[in-house]
Length: 109
Image: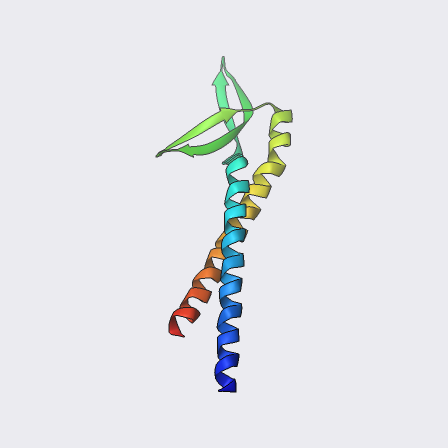
């Protein structure tokens, strides 16, 4: 009977961890939605025999890839936000994997 209580406490702990992970996923999604999406790149434009290189923001809009030209200063200001979004997306992916693992363990019990 005592072993049964220990098992139940472990499952309760796992359920609590799963709930914590769901809350974390929601917060991560909210923060990701507020950050700009895409990546920084450069576009080459030829005009009057000269080639100009402009920084730009590349992002998907539906099935198309859109480009938004930026100033050099604008690109440098945007870089930390894009890096933060990428880091948060990686954390969200790891968190979702953790949730799936916990769900698999709980479904066996």
